[in-house]
Image 1 (cartoon, rainbow, N blue to C red):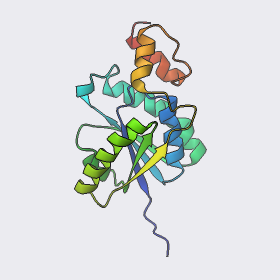
Image 2 (cartoon, helix red, strand yellow; image 1 turned 90 degrees about the vertical axis):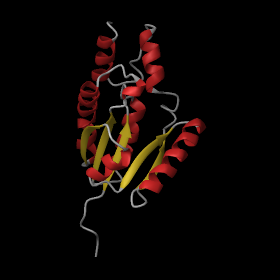
Image 3 (spheres, rainbow, N blue to C red; image 1 turned 60 degrees about the horizontal axis):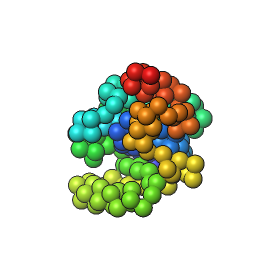
Image 4 (cartoon, one colour; image 1 turned 45 degrees about the horizontal axis):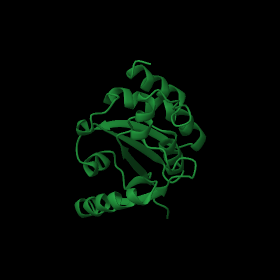
Length: 169
């Protein structure tokens, strides 16, 4: 008899700003679960360009179409506690992580080990970035924007407007 409990995935990140690469991972992850929670980390240590409420607004706006296309419930929340605590509070049994390059793998393996030790009942799955977005990072998007470069190919339009407004452009 199939399990009637909906499968909930948790995709955490700072999303400062959300990029087209993030949206690709979100869409692909949404096909694997019944409900996907995008956890926007407060992460004040990174000194984000966009405040938490703006990052949540950008993500909520950008994923509406993805939720309709995939038929998956997609929720966006902010969190400032341990990732596993945030995932567990949402009923997640899976943490979704995106990988772009080998350097990501080293960091993500450390995170996986720590999370698995703290919550062995929550599985981690890794999705590889598609070839069109492997080089995109939020850090580089902000750097290009700060230097007056065009970020239209890296972030969706709503988010682009927020980034440029924050930078006074």
